[in-house]
Image (cartoon, rainbow over all chains, first blue to last red; front, side, top):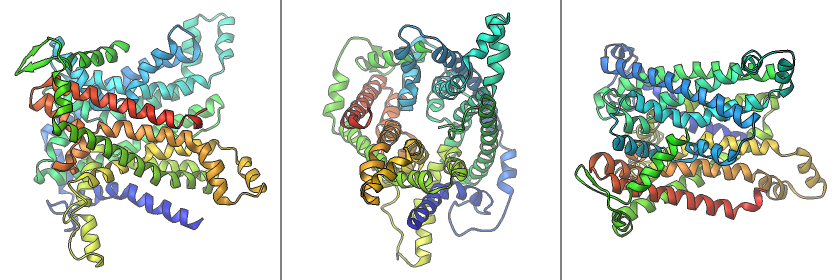
Length: 266
Length: 264
């Protein structure tokens, strides 16, 4: 079975090749993104600090990311609780439609939202992007939250109600603390998706670009590429930190509900 | 939430039957856009190319991913499995735009691959068939969707009861026959999920064809974007979107139907 192991290593090289090039070129002292390398520099990172358009895009992306993560997590909590705890008419078709963006090419989501907004006469702002991102993040939030809600023992909530808690009291004091790790994980995943999403933002953004839209506009200017590489390096670091936090909370959640660890997010 | 999705989809459907003259939309019902989409060789070629590229990406990605999923599931010690899964998913959290762009850097005329091969003396002049065409699009997308295929297949393989494999070998089947008659059929739900997870989004991918595809590698999403934002012909773009959606749905359904015996 050494062949298989060798194949796995070659495959990992393939997976990591572009990602590893990012830091290499971001410290390379040349404006051309090609080999051979030209010596070490940190000037591209310094340059990043001076670009105002970038700071605007970053702020805008953070705002959009935080808002859509909050909205999609809230919607996800409602939907996950409804689907795991209650039965209601047309449950399957309704849940199916909510999960639909998972299997719809993103360009379709983007153009159809654009068409509706055009027809209704809305102008494109950050809020239109937030709407689009909430739409695509909610299925992920539901998927993560459903597994935390499913792991709950229903008798805990019943016991609380029997002991005199109101329905809302039982929910906020018993259920909510137990699913908090799921909520944090879902929030972080939605935030990461929104920060990285390009095509919907590209169609729905108004005067203020998001970070990926800004990066896209910079890819056309060869002079700007090294600083884009530096930016990419910083972004990887940021998403690694976020992911580790999400993974930590997910594991803690699994331990709390006493379930077995069944793998990663996907 | 339902409204947020259903209304736009209905609107795009309605739009595809209208026409647009500069900025005014003519709301009379017409099939003109569809006729044009089917008769104009450009649209036909792009549609066909999108389906072919998405199909190629799917086959390449799933075939390359299966051994990895198999390796992690059957040959990695249980306590190391989570680490391997993490290792596989990390590259996927880099900005998608930048990953596509970096493939351009790797595959380019004096890119990483060519300069590496030249240096090793394996080739005498840079390879040109790997950038600005469909091959580049397939490579880049195969990379982008790798984790999406590995994980569902891995989950399906993990679910297989190991005693079934032992039983098969005890009953005299060889390793290879056990794999094809027990492991593979039981892993098929994962393979099917992986196929759909790759095929559906790739057909509508915009970034990769635009960055590495060159003129001959453009796909339907690029055309939809051009119709909407450059040519001001939203109805044509809508018609193309509806056609793309229909194509995706039909192909997925046929694929599911063909594999229905594995899904029971």
